[in-house]
Each structure stands twice: as C-alpha cells, then as structure tokens.
Length: 403
Image (cartoon, rainbow, N blue to C red; front, side, top):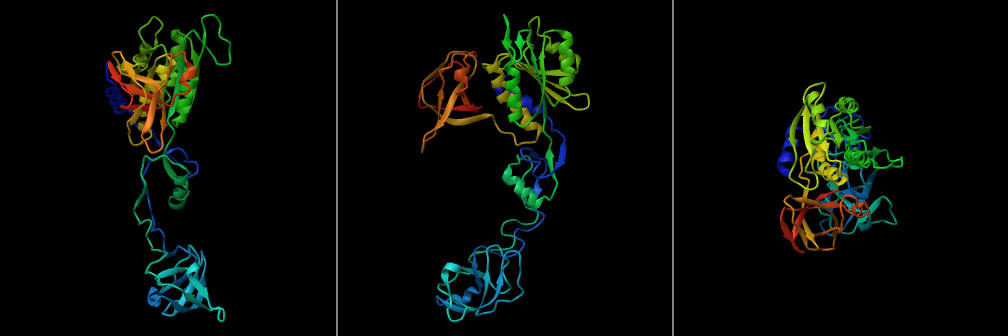
C-alpha cells in the first residue's frame, strides 16, 4: 500500500499534457497559457509623462524657482517636435510623450501661470532630474517574459495578452473528465429513493469539483452493477482525458470495474493508499488509442471521494494543463483544540480554517459525526491532516488540504 506522497508521485509520473489551442485573449479566461508570453516591444515605447504639468529642463530650476515660456502643449496620443531649450516648458498631460530636450515634469500644483502673460509659467520649486517621467523600456524590455507558461489566465492577464499578444493566444485546452456513478442502489437526485436506495451524491459532487478545477465535464450517469452496462460506459468514458468511476472498484462480487478496465487496455498503477478516508483508491492509465487516459476508481463513500479528488485528481488536472506542480498540503495552521488519531492511517479530517488579525491562520477540527453528517461537512473549508497513532494539542502547527 502506497503512502499519499508515493501515490502523488505516481499520478504525476503518469500524467501527460493535453493539446494546445488558439483563442482570443478573452476566450482564454480561466485557461492555462501554453507558451511564455514574451514582450515583442519595449514598454513604454517612448519617455512618458506620469503627471499633468509642464515638461522642462530640470537645470532651469536649480535656484528654487524659474519663469519659463510655454512653447507647446502635448496631450496623450499626440507628439511635439518642439525642442525644449533652457527657459522653455511644454504643457503636458499624463501619458503624453516627452518633447525633445525636456528631462523632467513639474506637477501643475507646483506651478503658477503668470496672470499678465498666460504664455509663461512660474515654477515654484527645484525639480529633480527625471521627476514624473517613465523612461522608454522602463516597464518592459523586448524579449522579457511577461507571463510564464503554466499561468492561469485571470482578467488582468486578459488585458496584458490583449496588449502584447494581439488577437491570438496559445493555451492548453480544457482537460475532459468523464464521470460514472455505479451501483444498483443509486437513484438520480430528482427521484425519491425507494427501499434500500440512496440518491447519487458522488456524481454531482465530482462533476462540480471537476468543473471548479477547470475541466470540461461529461456525466455518464448512473450505471447499474452489470457487466454490459458498465463495459459500454467505460468505453465511452475512456475517450476523456480522465475517467472517474465512483464505486465498483474493489474486490466484491459486483466490483466489475478493474477487470473491465483491463480488458480495455487500462494498466493498473496502484490500488489502495495509506489514508483515511479514501484507502480503496484505484489508479490506472490507458496508453493506447487516439490519446492516453487516466482512470481513478474512487470509493463510493462521498467523503472518501472528496478527499481523493482534492489530493489526486486535482494534481492530475494541474499536470494535464502544464501548471507548475504544487503540493496539495498547506502548512502552518495553528490548531485550536486537542485532537487524537488512534487509527493506524493518517486521517484527513473536516475542519474550518480562520484567521485572527495579526496572528497565524487557525484551524479547528469540526464536530463531525461521519459521512452521513452532511450539515457539519458543509461547514468545512479544509481537511486537517493528522498522522497515524498521534495526539495533538491546541497550539501545535499542522498541515491541511483546502477544499
């Protein structure tokens, strides 16, 4: 049985990159950049005024004041060929190109227009050379990496891409995730369960988590515990980049999944992981066909599926789109109450992370009564990680997986 870290290494090792696609910057929102965005230009392309005021030669103000002739006016989007000589100034607006000869801008607030001659301006202080001027190339140089490959495109990146990439961006397409929920006892959410039946919670939950993680989801519905139905669903599911099978993946009489996957060329990488809940996790890979596919056989217990998704499926989804690999574990949470794990496996326990102003983030294990306790589970925003056979005291720092 693998440890969690060993299982994560296997998931990463067997992951692959999905193909790239071209789209507009706006269409790239939420997707992952496939290539470094390299600036094709210097930015700004000219020395730029950063304040409304007057462009001048700073040397004219060394005595603490100066009376200068206003020889031109420059607004954003216009230029001036007038060279600013000693004793001259140009009225200039924020964002406008600096005129030849000027090396600084004095703010309007530090000037006064001569009431008897509106073509002259009185500068009321010494102006440091370079004041309120952004030099050409001061923000970006040609060839500079602005957004590295593997970055998720947010609204700010949409704006940057629109400026520097033109109308076309190379991204990783959304990974596809197919979901099969197995079990004769399952009914859809909209149906009233009969004797011995339960509503299908895993399927919708997994679909929601996959969509939240940036995947395109294909729900293949509830599949009964018979060979023909499950075989057909697996064939369809293997067309996706990732196939999630909820239930039916252990060694029981009706656990038909492993044998049917093997018949379709899926190699088992591992089965069972040293954690609670989620020990029965099954992971495999299909190499053949038009494209590879990863398969996760998730436990039928909803909390087990939740834990396994956040640990392993999210890792695979990040790998498929080329995101920088990061650990699912976030360290440094301050435990607010004692906790004892008497079990022989590490436990991932529903918890709530908060933050006190000026102090470390806190974490409190919830009074959770097990997988049927959905009301308490809904209050969790993290899974506190507790090692096997360990006691913890309030005030210790622990790690967690955010959910």
